[in-house]
Length: 117
Image (cartoon, rainbow, N blue to C red; front, side, top):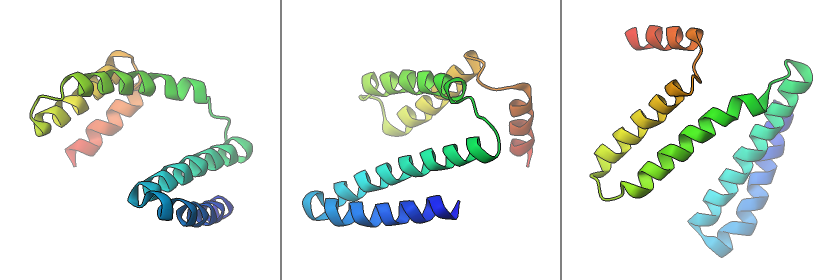
């Protein structure tokens, strides 16, 4: 983890030095997204290599479908009050995950236990 974090810290500094002079705060955002993506990839690699082989294709399909449905809703609902739009999008996202059976019984029990606290 230290190797991945250190690598990404160096990457972030380099990207900021390159992107901020040209794109200002947008460059910072781009550098952050690239760095976070690389960090995710490195963590995923190390987990799969040393701990457990994760089935990435099974893990991401349903959240991507739910995110796409939510994005379409956000695009066409742009005239709605922002607070209502955000709350509705969140509910739609989790309902879509529920319909797609993205949550296991264990996930639901953990969520209920967390909400009771």
